[in-house]
Length: 153
Image 1 (cartoon, rainbow, N blue to C red):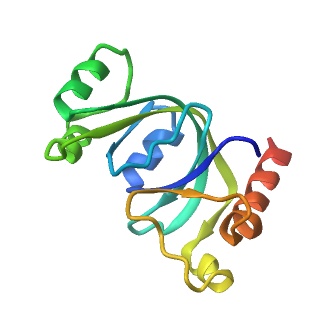
Image 2: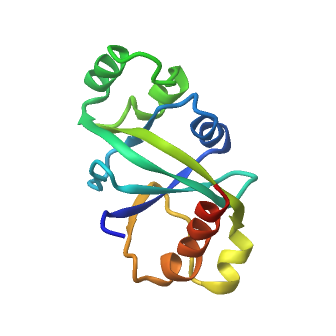
């Protein structure tokens, strides 16, 4: 694989904006986990979806105070970020903006109920967490979804 892999939980409306190409940056409260450029982000969609639906490659990563981050992002065209995104990070000390590159939907979403049959202890991340490519979540589930998707594209 080479680069680092992360899994992130996103609400359905924001995930669909990412995979439709509208949202080019994902905002997060910074909790000390920083994906670097060219990392892979696996997207778990929360809410009524409850499934891993796809992935994207990381472009620029910006960490700053929310007000500074907003100024930086306002200077970039077509970020796809709106007031609701900014309100999510406004009360945090530091926030993270992750540029979305090459969003790719998986051929078949991986439902939470399916994940739990294979990995009974699996819990969707509250924010973002790194995945080791040798851990069962990646090896048994995500790698297969990625291979199937790449074969069909």
